[in-house]
Amino acid sequence: MIGPTPLLDFFKRGDVSRDVRLEAAEGTLAPRAYEQLAILILLLEDPDAEIRATAEETLSKIPEEVLKTFLARADVPIDMREFFADRGIFPDEMPEITIDEEEPLLDASSSEDAALLGDENDDRETATQRLAKMSFSERLKAAVKGSREMRTILIRDPNKMISSAVLSSPKLAEPEVEAFAKMANVSEDILRIIASNRAWMKNYGIVHSLTKNPKTPLGMSLNLLSRLNGRDLAQLSVDRNVPESLRIAARKKVVAKQSGKDRV
Image (cartoon, rainbow, N blue to C red):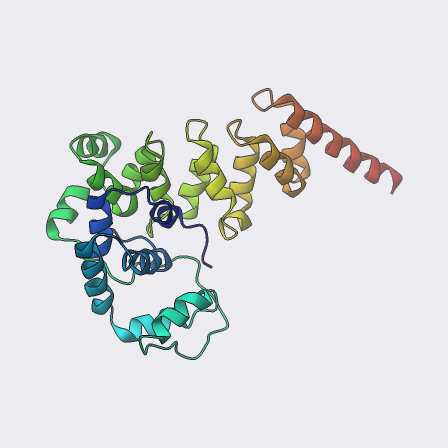
């Protein structure tokens, strides 16, 4: 299932420096497949001729069979299929299922990138030391392709593009998303992106964490109350760390459920 596209949104708004646009055009910034393709297509209209040409070259490097398989997904937007149809590339027979998570269609990372980003065995101190030496574009790559420890650090980065890019990482797993949803020191933008991903919101732990997080916008928390079980509602109704109005709303639901049981 194609969910929110944090990185693509920045590119659409034009809030991306030339060096980052060039990285994306080269295929070295490699978010999930749909987002990667959408960014490359967008960069074909970039005002910079080098970026346009580079994006075109990168698209041409994606194997046609890989593209056909991807385009056959039921959740690929019609405009993307039409774009490739104009280039003579059509989807394979349409499948009945969709895929929640996937790797980029092309990752042009170099061995230098791999060395810079470390691996999943890096501890927090090592990841922090690596990140401290990185430029903006390197930290952006780390958000998308770095280790779990790097993602845990960068999800709280003061730069919104970098923190949002963590949520575009193909490596991101739902337990990490649940951990992010619990953090009171992430931006509201991060919590909104998580809440707008239908696949993630099928996970009860993520829903519960967002509802309990005092940083979650109140309207969002109130909307999520109906999805909590009785035990978690009861705990929320006395939780002094959440806004009073949320506690009151939770208490009303607890009383209403109890009254319903009493009538039965």
